[in-house]
Amino acid sequence: MNNAIFVIAPYRHSGFWVFDDEKRRISKEPFVAGADVVLNLCEKAISKNFSIAFSDKFIPDYTFRLKMSGKTQGNGTYYKTYISGSDTPFITIWLCSVLLKYFKDRPEEIFIMVKRKEK
Image 1 (cartoon, rainbow, N blue to C red):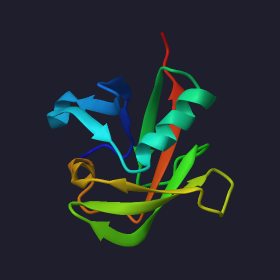
Image 2: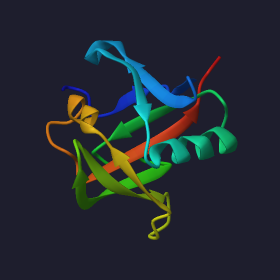
Image 3: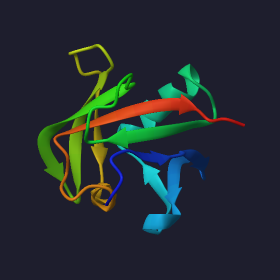
């Protein structure tokens, strides 16, 4: 796990937001339980084609910040989602254990930058 910032490109498949990461042998991994709602907002606000950069380290000009809520369920963890510049969470999302393919442990905070994909 050498990278400090990771990039994925979510897309729709069979009615779900999913992503692939060939390096980590991830294929069509779905976003559920609130994460899909956040991606719907990104699609409406930014573009139908966007990428997400994320890190457990601060990213300047981040779009969202996730803070671990302390709750776990099944193989996942709940995070409160904050829009950049706000101290008020707008939705709680659940992220599954696939997160551990990017981080050694579940991060306390995750910074996310959403950008329109270049054509």
